[in-house]
Picture 1 (tube, rainbow, N blue to C red):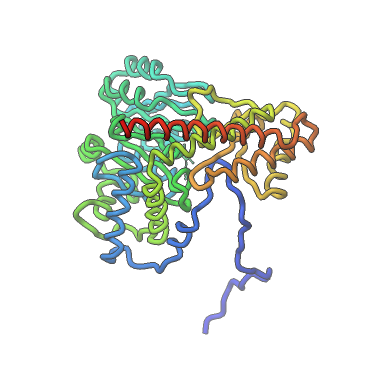
Picture 2: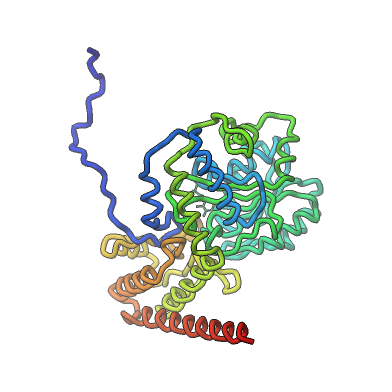
Length: 422
Ligand SMILES: *Cc1c(COP(=O)(O)O)cnc(C)c1O
């Protein structure tokens, strides 16, 4: 018998029981019990014919979510950051010049990815909280002929701003450049129309509006991107993320071992996407919009102001300025929300740290009880800290917004009925 060199930890260790939290930050979002149940089903082999059948369904559900016919649509094993890296490492060869539109944290990460793939980034800057400006992209492409790849973030989670993806793609295509679009926070929360907008490469993540467990990154490449990657003379600089090798496992015809697929996580994603299909994608977008309006009414009733202009706001990511009077104690506010109300909201990042809060209503977290809890909890904490917030006022405003939406919906349903009778 061998003696162990390293003893088991002496500290008494119990099973880990995380608390039940209300998740209203920048992700992860809450998870439907059906998704958790799917995840706990028996593990089977990643080449099991039953599993392979599920993979095909998963791909078709993803094409629905992305609104695309792209054959190459599948979840990469790894978080959203891996999906980002997958796009850049496959599409950018050493020496390539790549334009990145940056208006927040995640555009910055795209620049990092270009550099690490050996590319030369050309950065088009916009202010944090502003959408990416298609005119600035146009100018940059004119100044830099021959650029083959452009990257931008559709929904900047760090600020809650949404860029006009369709226009940005049109500009890039006029200059014969392929587009990489980050749809991590937008997918399923707000329209992402990959084929209509002619987005060439797109990636997302499982834990935001898809409301699945973290650790999977759905990606989609159109044929132009597949050709572009296949035409490369050099080896892709990542073995794990090499599109050509991954296709051996996820492709249409072959199923050969590449890496051990995270089977149970994939069951979960299948179920999460099925829930979206059952609800209907348009209804899912409408739900995010509806609860955003109620949340906004409540936050504004408390005197909190949005960072982003109305036309470019993401419904699922609500960034508001922290009132001057509590800026120095903003971490305390979030801590109290977490410990007293089991509620998580997001802090600001980078230059916006300590300046904004980010309230997410993503996927399964996007429901009236969360909107009401958030308004009630935040109102009570801010009032305790001496801000001129009347407890209950925000909930009243949200209630009023819901009533208005319901009245509009009823009116809409009535006129539709009349139109059908005619
Ligand atoms: C969350 C996020 C990512 C990174 O996803 P991870 O799953 O955390 O790796 C990338 N881009 C955007 C816009 C995000 O919100």
